[in-house]
Image (spheres, rainbow, N blue to C red):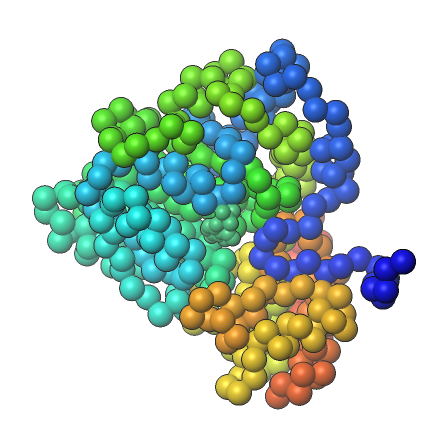
Length: 399
Ligand code: PLP
C-alpha cells in the first residue's frame, strides 16, 4: 500500500509546457495503433499535415518529426546551412541561448545579439547587424517568438521588415515552440523561411512531436547546404509525406491526438484562442502588479500572452516558494532557468486553460506568497477577476 497522501481534485499544471492534455485528446490517442504503411495511416497523416498548415497559416510543406522541439531546431540548421556559416541570433533568454549553443556545436558561427533577458528581440538591432554584414556572410537570422524562460515575446513581422529594410538575403528561422496555438502566427504572410514548433504547449498534446514549416527559399537552400544530416533530412521526409508516409516509424498515437487538437483549435476559433491567451496574460500581470511584485519582462510591448515570469523580492528564493505551493495547493509553477534560477517563478497561462483555471492558479500563488512570508499586498486575485470580467463584458457588448 502506498503511504503517499491522496491529493483530491486535479493537479494544477501551471508550468509553461508541457500543458494539460484535454480529455478529448487523451481519448483520441487511446486508440489502437495501425499499420503505418496502410492507406488508413496515409489518410490520417495527410489530414494532420494539411491541418497543421492551417495553424501555421501556411500553404508550404510542414514536417512532423517524432521528436521534441530541440530536434526540429537541429533539423532547421543542418538542412539549410553549411559548416562555418554565420547565423544571427538574439539572446532573448535560455531557449535562445540553447539554440545558439547548438549552432556552435554543429559547426556554425553564431553572432549573438545580447539582451538582459527582460525584453524581446529588437528589430532595429537585427537591422543594424544585417547592414554591417555587407558581404552577406550571415546566412540565417534565428529568433524565438515567445521566450518561455522570460515571458517576453518578439514581433516577427517587425523583424521581417527589418531584414527587408537591410536588403539582406538571410533566411528567417523562428522558434514558435511556446507560441503556436497561443499567439497569432503567420508563416507565409510574415515571410518566415523556417518555423519550428512542438506538441506540448499551445497544441495541448503530450511532448514528443515537433512541427517545421519550410518555405521554398529554405528548400532551395537545403539543396546546397552541406552540414551532415540523415534522420533529420527534410528531403526524405517531404518525399515520403507527399503520399502520407514517413521514412521511419511515425508517432501514430500523437498523430491521432494532433488531429483532435487541430479540430479543437478551429472549433474555438483561432482568434478566440489568441484573445483568451491575451486575457489570461493581462489578468496574471494585473495580479502580479497588485501584489507589488515585478514582472520580469520590463517592456509592455514584449509581454507574453502565454507565460509570465515573476521576480521574487531580494532575499526570497523562488524555488522554495514553488515547493511550498506544490506541497500545499497541488500546483506546479515553472522554475527559473539558468541565470534566473531561484530568482523567478513562471506562471504558465497557455494551452487548454480557462478563466477559472487561471483564477485558481492565481489564488494558489497569492496564498503561497502568504505562506512563504513573501512581502506582498493583498488583492491580486481581485484585480485579476476585474480584468477577466472587463474583458468578458467587452466581448458580450460586441456580440
Ligand atoms: N524553445 C522554446 C521557446 C521552448 O520553450 C522549449 C522548451 O520548453 C524549447 C525550445 C525546447 O524544446 P523541447 O524541450 O521540446 O526540446
